Image (cartoon, rainbow, N blue to C red):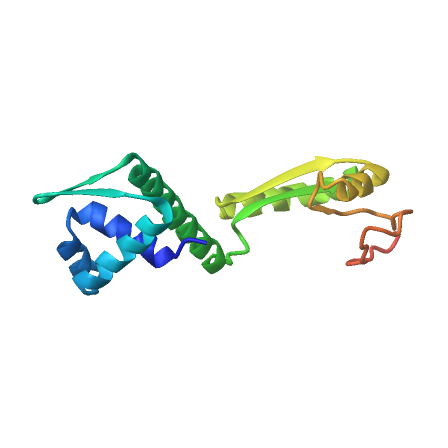
Length: 164
């Protein structure tokens, strides 16, 4: 595995155009910057052509730089996903029989309108299809008006409605 700090250093060297400015940006010594680049080059070959007052990436350097940018983006995305625990963001697929769906549909529309980052895909289905959708991962959740015949899905009663 490539040390992410070394990749971060390569990005700073490329973005600033010099080891000195990269060291200032990263609050490291110039020797530490040189060491990070040397370790990357020991692993991948020559990455930078050092010319007077200029650094130029080699073809390998370009590939490693692209990898470093991808890693930086993936890290930022992971941080964002881990920090974002908003229950009103994302997508959910819900299947219900018509009797429940007709009552629930206006509430789902209200939730989706109140929370634009939430996407609710709702479909009407008979109970056997609701169970099958859950088993085949075509749906996240299903609501039914009777317990499933198949014991595999988790079924929990959440409401009772008396007959009038």
